[in-house]
Image (cartoon, rainbow, N blue to C red; front, top):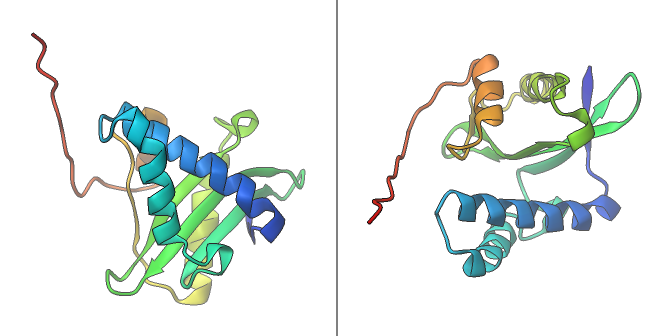
Length: 157
């Protein structure tokens, strides 16, 4: 099973840099923003969402740790959104060596337990880029359902 452990301050900067980079790449790949602007936009969004880093109110950034081996298998970033009455997943990432081994599903199950223990709103929401089939399959496998779908088509000449 996976345990959720709050990320340590000394781990935060490395996580932040990787997260900003990956989010910028995903936004560019999805056609949301040009590559030369993506990094800047991504960094700005992270700064707005985490103005106080790990100490940002209602935000939790976890290491997902395999209890058997004690290895960190991934990370999870959530925010408790009182107005929307949900817990929003801003980021979930499994380390490459641990993908496809059930740790993503276990991380989401650990999140459900965390939410119940703390009495947080019982609804989990997230955004996933449409081309991320692996993530889409994971979310569907644990009961997530699409609530909005945006589609685009590039018209070729």
